[in-house]
Structures are given as C-alpha cells and as structure tokens.
Amino acid sequence: MPSRIEAMRDEGGFTADLADLMREWLDAKDWVHGQTSGSTGTPKQLKLSKKAMAESAARTCAFLGLNEGDTSYLCMPVKYVGGKMMVVRAMTQGLDLIWNTPSLTPMKGLREPPVFTAMTPMQATAALADPDERELLKGTRHILLGGSGVSPTLAAAVADFPNAVWSTYGMTETVSHIALRRLSGEKAAESYMPLPGVTVSLAENGALTIDAPGIAAGRLV
Image 1 (cartoon, rainbow, N blue to C red):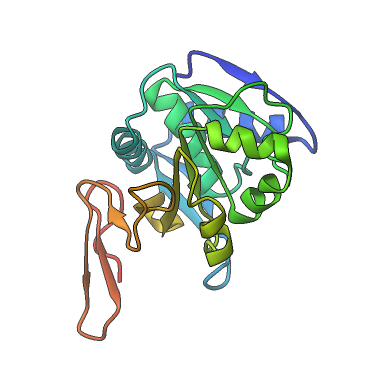
Image 2 (cartoon, helix red, strand yellow):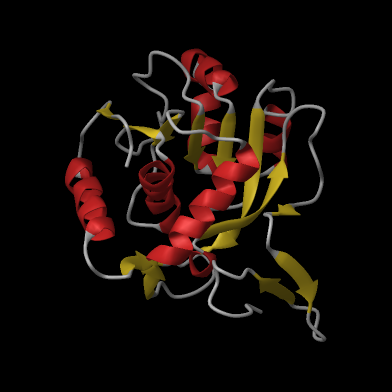
C-alpha cells in the first residue's frame, strides 16, 4: 500500500473514481474492470488480471529504478489502464501517491517535482507552455508519455531535458506499456526497448508479435 496519499485538486468526482478503483483492487476478485480507449477500434470492456497488473508494475518500477517512498503523481483518468496502473504501482510497490484531477494543467498546484509521473502527450504539450509547469516537468525524474503518439514537435521540445522522458508502447491488453523509448538527454533513442521478460518479433505477414509472459494472456499479434 502507498505510505502516503495526498490530493491536490478534486473536481468532477475524481476522488470517487479513485476510491472505487482502490476498493476493487482490494476485493476478493482476481481482476478489475478495464476499458480500451478506442484509439485502434471500437472501445471494449475487459477484465484485467490483478496478477498481470502487479507484475507489470514491478517490471516498470525495476526498469526505472523506483523505490518504496518515491513520489508517484497521478494526473490521468483512472477509467483507462494508464491511470489504473499509476495507482497499482503505488499500491504494490509502496510509492507515495499524489493525485490531481486530470486536466490540461497537469502540474498545477504542485510545490515540488514528483519522482515519477505519467501523462498524455496533450497534457505534456500544454504543461510545457506554462513556465512554472515546465520547470516542474524538468525536475521530475521520470515522465511516461502514453495514450497517443508523441509528435516530433513534442519529442524535440523535451530533447534537452535533464531528466528521463519516455514515450511508451503498449495497450490495454498488455496492462500498460511493454516497451519504452527515451526521448531526452544523451541516452535518447530512436527505437523502443522492451521491458525485461518481453520479446517482440515479426509474424510472417509482417505484423508485430508480442510475448510478455506474466503480463499478456498468450502471444499477441
């Protein structure tokens, strides 16, 4: 469980959504409700395995070097897997969870940068336009960008950041990302690096094939 939970803003019932997710995570079922965003087709309702979500959380935190007590900042809706996984990482890895009602001013109200956050490219683009939010972003050790593609303009805007800004690749069926591409600093890359334990290959028809034991239910094509 998180050692600390702190709220910045509560608008539009976000507290209730967060509380519902926490209760669902702690109940006796071995899954939580999930919903795809519809970015690649008609939105679908899914049952997301708690075991797979916990495994994904552990792999992400290990890859990024996050430790118990580090601050994790939630500013995404918990309706979709990106927001859900921010909560699950805090609950399973002991991160301090700070949350703010999702908006296009994602860092507003923060007094100091968190260690870790995730947001959409649209949120990041809006935050970069505000000097105070931009400085908070630059001070955040790890930023995950997901939910849609990162534009070349946004990638260029964070290229000189001293911290680690990551573009993510994944889907609801893989309970968040299975690969990361660093956008900032000397370690910036053009390609994505699969998380430990994840392998990718090409099928005979050229489709991407993902093997993510413990995270995805079988091979995904």
